[in-house]
Amino acid sequence: APGVYQLASLLVELDTSDEASQILCADALYQMGCVEEAHKLLLLTLSRNPQRSPILARLALLQLKKGFMYDGNQLLKKVIKIGDTSCLLPIMDIFKDEDRKLMQTHCHFRALTILK
Image (cartoon, rainbow, N blue to C red; front, side, top):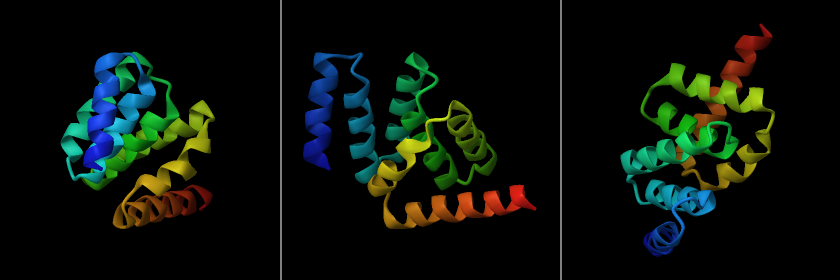
């Protein structure tokens, strides 16, 4: 993760509008345990394009991880409303095991609540 972060940071410096590099940088920060820094970078990236499901989904996980269930739910709802949920499966590969289980459990219980 540190090497990926260094590379992604360099790419961001070369092109500050490169969303993919910013997401890669945030993912590396997350993997290194720098959750707050990843969160700030994702918010900055989201401010440029508020309808990007990959960013919203990552932010949802970070909100759930911090215990902010309502905020996490709102972000997940926005991903679903946009209609681009294809980003969720690849993102699950990035999440740490405990966070992947948190997201899966949360989504499962929310789905059951909606169905009831």
